[in-house]
Image (tube, rainbow, N blue to C red):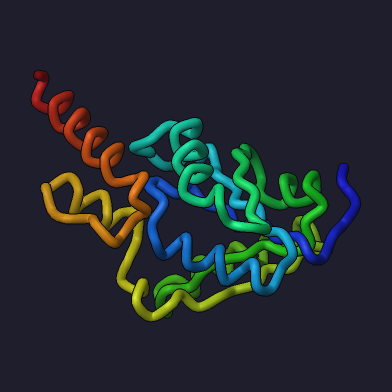
Length: 172
């Protein structure tokens, strides 16, 4: 287990796909913490469009030039991962009031499981409040433009994967 570091935060999620809202939040997180680990969750409860390895690779490509950001995959309980990494905080974004109830419950459960890790909430930048990975996938699946909603490196793989899934569904 790593030594506890209050200047290290974990920003967890499935990031399927990574959006510019995620990028904005993690960049803002580096103004508060020395290091932010962009922790890509395996997530067995969600039917992800991209594999864990693909999501990690896309995040590394999009975030690789930013100081103070590490991209890592993780599996299992977030608080266990935070303990192994020695993180002092979990960074979470809030888009709207609708996010609050779920995030509040998760923060309380994480606190119950590990009282040494704080949850820090950042309000999403106003220009990304409407944005979610689900919305981006829906737009891409239906041929709409996702330019400016996701990092450039995500655009082509997302359209390609949506087309692959469409063809599979049609039995082509």
